[in-house]
Length: 232
Image (cartoon, rainbow, N blue to C red; front, side, top):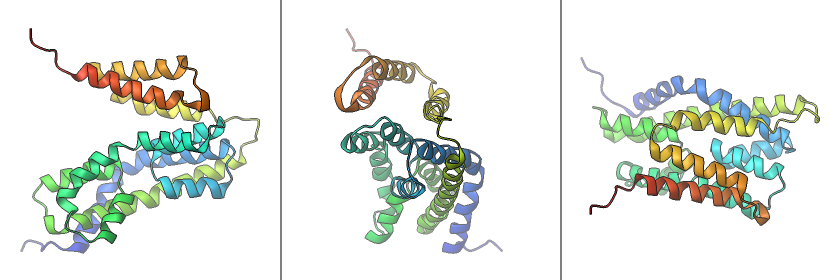
């Protein structure tokens, strides 16, 4: 007799779907926590940033800017630009979760990550109960959040044990490089990475704005490289 789909079963399926991702999220969360501690944040500040932002790439960028003494507005603007992709994710998920109440939609938005989006879209494309898709998402998102915060806390505690003269600044660029290299699979991405990297090094702007400018330049170059050539 086939199992009847239920909210509980889909929530558990979301928890199980998270298991393979934990192998990458745990070290990344530890790196983010250690980098925040190494940048001079107190454990309370580092934990608060992890709870409020809950986005690894934005947290690392914010940490790097904080360590370099960038103004708060620049830090916020940089994190916002990095996280703009979630607007597209949200628009895509709206077709599945648009009928839910605002409270659950707000929780979905807070728990949104690259992994949660990708696995939820894959789940929706399979022969799965659409009625309980949000339960699958909540299971996946809850497991991701708990794992990320736990890993960040471990990183913060380990980072606070490192002597101040042992700089952890190298963690930030190394982490970005590790994230970037596997994505360099086509011409547009390679050109965007080269343009953004060169701009971040060569540009000298006030208020530490070179990172924002480099990000915009990289996006522009990538879009131009993807544009098909016009016919004669």
